[in-house]
Every structure is written in C-alpha cells, then in structure tokens.
Amino acid sequence: MVAWSDVTRWNPAVLQDAVGDINAAYNKLVACSDDLRDINTPEGWHGEAADAAAKEVNGIIDGLEEYAADLAALRRRAGDVGDAITGVQNGVKEAEAIAASNHFAIAGDGAIVDNGAPRCAGRPTRTGSRRTRPHRRGTQRPGRGSLAAGDEC
Image (cartoon, rainbow, N blue to C red; front, side, top):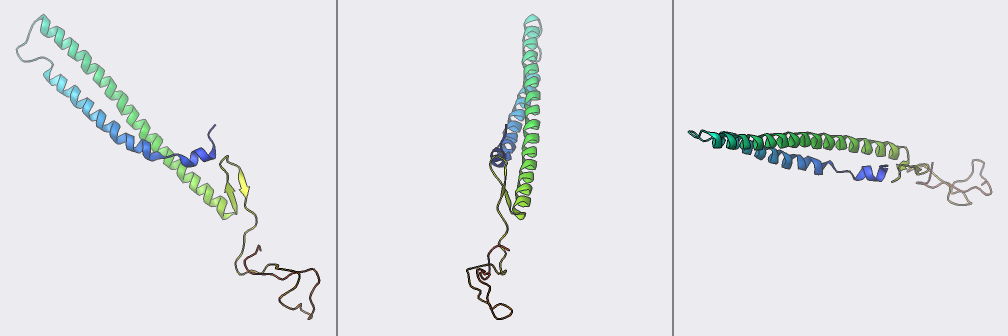
C-alpha cells in the first residue's frame, strides 16, 4: 500500500521529461517507416524477386507502424500519469496547509498529529506563582502565576 510519505515524494517531472524523449523516438520511427515505404520497390524492378522484396519490406513497415502506435500510447499514458501526479501533489499541499492552519500535521504513515493548542503572540500566559500585576483588590491569589506573552492562549 502507498504511504503518505511515498506520495509526498512523487515527482511528475520524470514522466513529463520522458514524454519528450518518447515523442522524439516516435517521430524517428514514423520517418523511417515513411522512408522505407518510399524506397520499397525501386522504379523498373519487376518480377518474383521484386515482389518478395516488397512483401518483406511491407512486413517491416507494418512492424514499425505497430511499434509507433505502441510508442504513441506510451507517450499519452506517461503524460496522463504525470498530469495526475501533479494533481495529487496539489492535493497533498492543500491537505498539509489545512492541517497546519488547524495546528495538525500529517505523519509519513498518514496519521494526523495534533500539534497542540496554538501559541498566541501578545496574549498573556502564566509564568510563575506570583502575579506581575496586582489583583483587582490589591492582593495576589496564592498559587496562581502571572501570564506572559507568547504562551498558549
């Protein structure tokens, strides 16, 4: 089974780069097939030998065209999968952003990790057993600390 850590490392560039190489091979193959078709039977050559040679070359051309069709299918599938991986990566980024904005993280195994309550800047938190501000009535509560900026809110 695919883990979250695997999905975060997927790279569509490998397949997208391969599409260019596959396309170049396809174009060369089609050009070879066209060249063979053009020279299949030289002008003025007739007879059994000419027919046998033409039949052999036609078999090679048919094989090249089948191989070209396979390359075309591979080119399309590689492009489709590369595009799909890009979509998955966008989903991964969105899921991680949503998790982070809610103080969670996504672990490598896909588990959701609670990062605890957020730290709010400028909001006071407890620092010790004494208050830095006097209590409303001029006294301090025993056992209660004061709040310092930057702690959890």
